[in-house]
Each structure stands twice: as structure tokens, then as C-alpha cells.
Length: 351
Image (tube, rainbow, N blue to C red; front, side, top):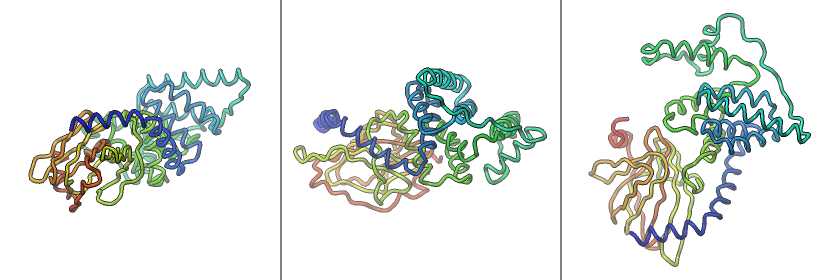
């Protein structure tokens, strides 16, 4: 096992440039579902949410070059305070202000764009409640809002009234920005999943959502390896695989696997065994007849030969691991049936 770890480190370093190029090419292909302006709105939102000022400045310039107006970008950044706080929103607006001055000094006259129109007549909590219902497709209720009615009022009156009531960005675009921001932060998976549903209700396609998530991931992935292509069969949910090393000299292979929240592979075994290096997110590994093990960045799993097992993401987190297959030419994978919802729920502690 130690030899395989050393092989992985050496080959990963030597291939890093190639993998970065591959990741850029994959990103270009996967984000074509979005227009150039939409891609930059997603990138701007993601970098703002993460507080990545260098990446944000690059994304802001690319957005202006793609044809976004200053007011369109301002509106996105103002909305961001509702999802990632005033400090990051204000810092991002300051970055846009300084960039616009720099561009003006170089003779670049960026378009101002349309201002928001007058708000609807009446109280913001009334038209905000109506906006929230239309956005979500049904009235929003829940025990949390009974427990803390003030937050329900703030959401309805301010977020969905004062902000989503402004008409210089449509709701589809606002949801695009929201999904990108939430996908870039840790601990917001529940809200992210809700806004993915809302975004689809307001016109985003599955392909566009995948592209937004790709952009958000690339804006701040802790994992330096490419996401790759959609995984073949034998998975429940969405997963992507990128081959990193297929080395005949050492008779081993290494590949990066990304699992969307709740995704897991089928029960399976390897005739020689396998090693997993967990690099991002949270997931689970379980051998047949044994208790599941929770995995986080830094977890290493050494899987014995001919041991039936599965691995995948936690319900509320994307999960990434590097898989190492020793003796790749003779190491046979035998696939079994899917991990049932009951088995998965038990492994995840009933979540």
C-alpha cells in the first residue's frame, strides 16, 4: 500500500499540468448550456460567496467583456448579501467600483444598463409573499417559521419583496446567481437543494444547473483534480469520473471520482483490492455486514480483496475521492445490485 501511495504522489505531480488543461477543456464543454453572460454571473456569484477577491476581479472583467452591464452586475452583488452577508457583498461591490474606474481610465466605457423600476404598490410583505409563492410553485410553510416568525417575515418582506421584486434581473437569473453562491459555501446544502428546485421551476434546465455547479466548483475546489465525465452505470444518482493515471509500467490506475449529494455506487468487489483517498466533502464507505464508516478529507480506505462494499456521498454534501486500483490488468471488479434507499439511510444515520 505504501508503494502505491508513493506512486500516486509521483505520477500526480508529473501530470498536474496536463490535468489542469484537461479540467479547463472539460469546463468549457460542460458549461455550454449557459450563455457567456450567464457563465460569468455564476462565476461572479461563486467568487463573491467564497470571498475570493482575485478570482472575483477576473470574473468581473470577463463579465463586462461578455456584455453584462454595470447595473446587472451591481444587482447580482447586492442580492449576494442575502446569501453570503454584507461584508462579502460590500467587498465585491467595492471591487467592481475600482475595476470600472480602471477600465474607464483605459478608455473602456462599460454600459450602465437599466435601473430597477418602481416597486409594486402596497406592502413589501404582501407582494413578497406572492413572489415567494410564485417562485416556489406553492406557499412556503414549515415548523421553523413558526419557531422563528421574524425570519419568515424578513424572507417574505425583504428578500422576496424588496430584492426579488426589483425588475432589472429576472427570477431565472436571480436563481442562477443564488445557486452558484450556495454551491460555493460549505454547510448550505439544504438551501442549495431547495434553490435548485426553485431554479428549475423558473426555467433552468438540468444541464444549466449542472453547468452552474461546475462553475461554482471550479471557483474554489479544494480538490485540484478534474471532475471528468459522467460516470457509467452502477451508480445511484449523479457522479463523474476522471482517469488520472493508467500506468502499465506499475500495473496500477488512479482516477478522481466526484459524487453529487446522496449519490453512491452499487455494491461491488475487487479481486485484488482498492485504496481510496478522500479529498473533498463528506461520504460513506460500507462493507457488507459491517457498520458504515463516515469519510472526510484526509480519510484513507484500504479495501481488502474480494470484499463486497460501496462508497458514496453524504445526503447533504458533494464527495470526492481518488481511487487507486493495484494490478489493474488483473484486478477484476464484480458489480452487484444498487444500495437501497433503506441501506443508504441506515448508513447515513437516518438522514
